[in-house]
Image (cartoon, rainbow over all chains, first blue to last red; front, top):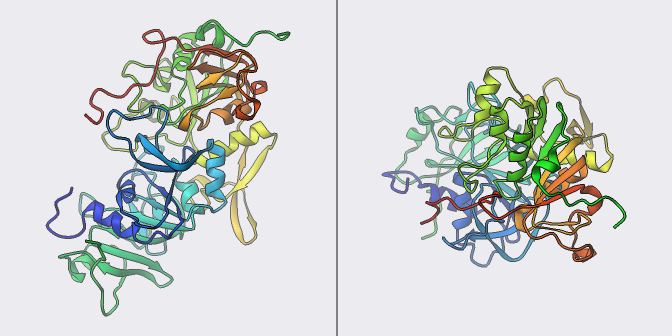
Length: 225
Length: 248
């Protein structure tokens, strides 16, 4: 996945979202692509990573051989603790979420609609689902960012007018990054904010399932060298 | 100690009285704090028609391959219903024993957002019959259910989820049942202990004398704990382990 002829790599996608995190933000990263946000170099910014299972202030993945079998993040990865970390139980962890203490949650998704609805817990035709903490996070975090591939494996668009599969939350998504670029959900709809390397606006339109607001000038995706 | 001892000699002894039809919470999150030995004991005990409450029905990477989990109880035909935050595989490559039983209509699966699951048990343990939450508003899970607007925002009514039994794992316990957890082992465990009529704990370290845990450092007070069993070293006891291929 690291080599792409055009567009953003998954790490670049997450780097772009991570650039938006403010100093002192409490951040919750979903399973899958979003976990890569923690690899970003935040410089002088203090970022506190929170995990649904009650870990406040986790750090990088544990080195092989240094794993603590009592310590995982929400994805089951063996992480480390930063100085000042704290542990709470699940009800307190979600009290923190529900009361709006999470500044941003970055989630993966199957679809994001132009009105800010998104779907990430139930695939088409599936019985049951895997919600985990996504509904609580999506309903309550101050910002909801999504990181996902622009199209499905079959070439269907993931940016859509209305979600075709059951929604996780309604009207909550602020920012979406895909391999094709950065998109903002505005009151007027889905806006192309920044364009991925080697991708054209026409290509993005053709791969998008909703109306796309394209400003006269669209800058390339900002990436730190 | 005047009251009957909470220290049980075996997992089998500690789960002997579970009746058919009981509602049992199993703690743990991604194997950390998962009562692996008690899963095995309930599977061997054989109670049927159980409602099982847990974050998910499967273990994870650090569960030894042969170790019991809820999948074993499902295959035994002991489970009537599950209440979980995950009732389907999260990856196409993943297989969930639960799925085929749900498809055949043999097991009812109630899917609950993780924070709502935790809070429903917290409410049960706190004497609160119901509460409102913004999670799941506007979704399929809220269809046909009561909502109410507070301060201009819509909330969904959720009911407390009391347990007959809680099966949990802790790091340390004293003979009075006071518990300490280590790192992310706490997760659902203290909440399930408070939501249950009978809490059974598998304990990692040797059981300490009463008073050996400073009152300020108790995570779950012994009044919520009824039965404690020390986990024997492997191979008699189940312990999480890194998969052979992990990171190497």
